[in-house]
Image 1 (cartoon, helix red, strand yellow):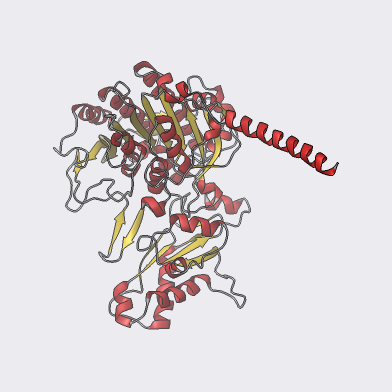
Image 2 (cartoon, rainbow, N blue to C red):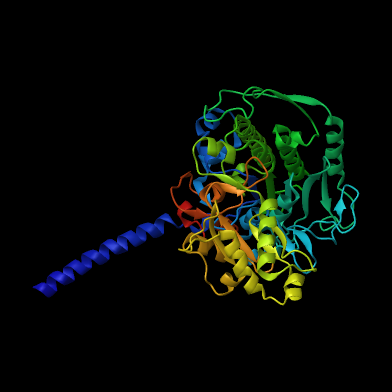
Length: 551
């Protein structure tokens, strides 16, 4: 009897399991006919420094707006309120690279916006390419921009490699945003320098801007110096306040000024250029899908200056919603929203402004890098002696410290020896080995990385995904939450939730509308788009297909 009962129970368990498996399979699959239908256009929209809560905190106000593009995408797409960059340091260049490669920095080669090249004794910008001079303004010697430092392929590259004859075009105020979104084979990447749209010879080998870009610049020249008022439109959420409460939100801004690009003016310029590119390249009308990348930098420019708690940034979010709506309307008229797949996300979040966080009782603070470098160099000189070859630390920034090889050679010290001492100098450990320097959580060295002796948990995971020897620092400081380097009023440079959390929306391509309470990573975008487009995922893709959004 026991054997018979066990057999019956096994049949029941197997049946339940099989039913659950078939149900799960049905929920994450689609008919072949539906899966075979390819979109004519892929549009990737990025708002720079768009932390997850910019959509959730202001959701009621966003939904009250007519013709809002972000609201429309939230309503018609698969919306993940919190998606993550699981990397050690969240920044613009690695963020945009991650979106289109599906790879973390250890694979795609971009861990920071700028790093130090010890062999050349100079700073390296993530998009620097001396062999690709700027087109659209006078280019200085040894300057130029391209994606040559990006390792591996992007979604746009894979479209090209598939033989569809796809067009890939990207637009942003920031060069690194447009360049990384476009990948290696973009037909054109546009950005703004000195108040005008420019590109580089990487995209325009003849060294001439297209006529339609020249037209855009003529419009900019005409508008330059004109003023417009930036005021509150509609009822604020009550969750923010003017940066300068005495001055209030009302202000006059001069078009073409540095300040103007951090307002609705910068958002409008970006949308206008994207719509013009859409028409001039006749995107969405060819044999295969085209790729349009649009990154709104104004949000980040304003966010650094005024912080995420400012009414000004709330107002800018409302305007971005309207402006994305204009972009969607233009796409609907030329390509059709039903023929388009949209991705919306941010390239990183942002920390609360330190001054405001401290005033609210949070344990927050600043590192003054200049003072810290003086102290650390003095400590190394005390330990190893002064060198005629220079300072022990060649460069420090974004919590990365780079040792000077010529000093190591002069004093006949190994990199590992000096790293160990520098680590202790930063930590100031007590007898128990715990850091006593205010604001320091962990410190690791290149040798720690090589020997896999890394800080535990999330730090170890993020370091392994981010750290690149000879690009990342020889010694890296991991601050405590809400601690940053002194500089901008608010900034981002950690792997904590406020810096790594952004919204993610995928609309079209068979994605099932709804709000998804599920952990997702930004590296999942590229393989999911690859599935929709019928492509091989980009070469270094670390992510997964978001199967849960397909019926």
